[in-house]
Length: 117
Image (cartoon, rainbow, N blue to C red; front, side, top):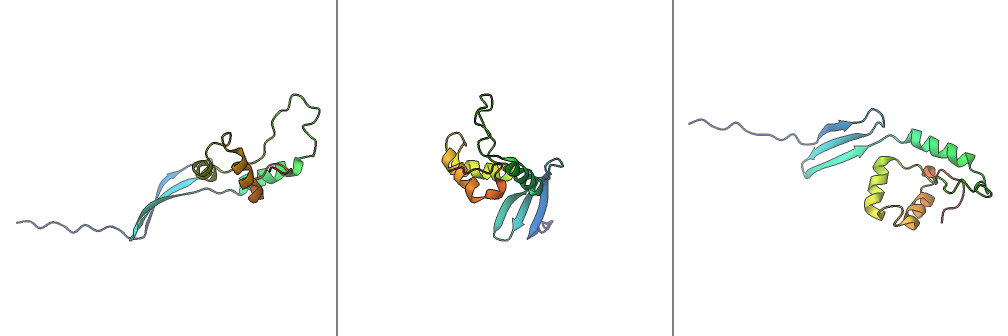
């Protein structure tokens, strides 16, 4: 009678599932003793720099008198954070007040110098 070989699961394992070289976004599988989970990481320094540059270019009254410019960019949110907020607040067009409030509380992601709410 043959005996079965023991089966071991590596505890505290971190395995790369996907990597996007364009955005730097990486998704990992974590095997822990108390359960498994998936995490996503994305570097945001370039996004923060772009938002800061746009906020510095903002001028009060910039939209006044320009009938062709009806919208203004208000933020630059990394994809990882955006999808987390999407679950929390719903679509920006359906719940703009919460999205704008979040941007006011997280000013590093604002792409405008004006007050949003």
